[in-house]
Length: 371
Image (cartoon, rainbow, N blue to C red; front, side, top):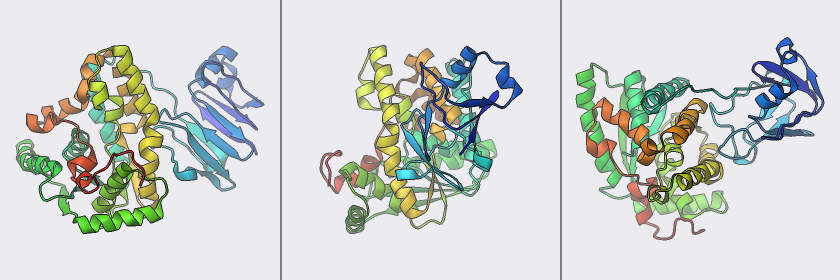
C-alpha cells in the first residue's frame, strides 16, 4: 500500500518511510514533485528531521507530537486516530485522509518574537483555534487563569458558548473566584460595548452522588489513581447534563509556562528548562490519555486550544528567549489584566481542579495512589 506524505514544499510517495531526528534517513522514496527535485539531499533531510514517523506493515506510528508518542492505526478506509485511547491533538499535526494522503504542517519560524509580541499573538492564536469549533462549545470555568483566558477570548469573539463551574462542597475556592469573574464580566462587557453571548451554570455535587460516580468509573476503567478519579468526576459532572459535543480544556500553560510548584521554586534556568521539557513530554500519558477515557465514554470531543501547534510554538520560543517573563504563567495572566479584571483574578495562584472544586476533600489520599 503506497501512501503520499506531503510536507511543504515537497511530496514523497513511498512504501515505507522513516525519519529519525538528528540522524535522518529515507527508505524507498519516489520523487513526485518538481519542488522536491530542486532540494539537495541534505536540504531534504533537514526538512524531514523535524518529524519522526515509521510505517510498519499496516501500522503507522507517529511521534511528531511533542506531547508524547501518538499511534495511528491504518485501515482500508483511512487512519484511525483513536487507537488505544490516544488521539492526534488538534492543530499539532494536521492529517488529510483523502486518497491515502497524509498532510503534515511544517514548523513555523518565528522571527524576533519577544515577550510582548508573543503575548499579543497568544490571544490571537487561541481565538483562531476556538473559531474552528463547529458547534457551540462548553468550557469548564474554574476561576483559574487558564480557563479564564479562554473564557475572555470567547467573550471578545462574541460567539455563543456555555460555561459551567463544578463544586463538591458548598463554598469552594473555584466558585468564589468564578462569582467574582462573572460580576466583573457584566461590567466589562457593558464598558466595551460587547453582548453577553454565554450561559453559566453552577453545579453542586453531593458526596453521595460523587461516590456513586467514582464506583462507576472503577468498573469502567482500569489502573485509576485517586487524582484520576477526582478529575474524571469533575469532567463528568461538568458535562453530562449538557448536549454540547465540544468541550474546551485549559490544559497546557502549567506544562509550558512553569505552573507547577517544583518549577516555581527553582532558580536555575537550565534546571527550569529541563523540568518544563519533562512536563511537556509527560502531557500525553499523564493528562490526555485520562481525558480521552472520559471523552470516548461520554461521546464528547475535547478541544485543547493551548496545545494547538502555533500556540505551543509561541510557548517554546518564550522558553528560549524570555524565561524570566514566563515564570508563573505571566503570558496568560497579562491579557486577563489588560482586559480589565482585577488582581485577585489575573493573579490567582494555580489550584488543581480536584482541589479548587473540593473533590479532593471527599477521598483523602495521595493523588497518585491507585484505587
